[in-house]
Image: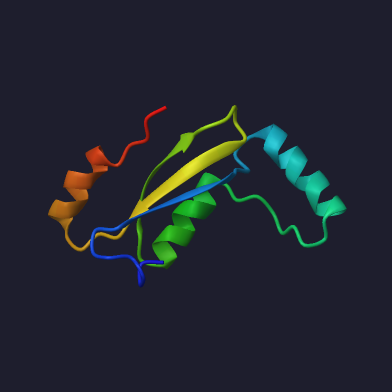
Length: 93
């Protein structure tokens, strides 16, 4: 992802999350029903994936009761840019 983002570009991924008990139950049932389903990823998984592709994980925002989150990352080229955008990259309800 970092390769195709412009300098200081942002990425937002909206997905079901494995951070709650109910979502893990749904995830387990989904794997039994749908063979193509791999699994739901949690916040720690997204943090690791972002880091592996050269993105700084900015944060996450729950958009439905415990099931869905938006995970936010940004391609950072220097520390000043990182400090400036940590405050500006926010979701509004």
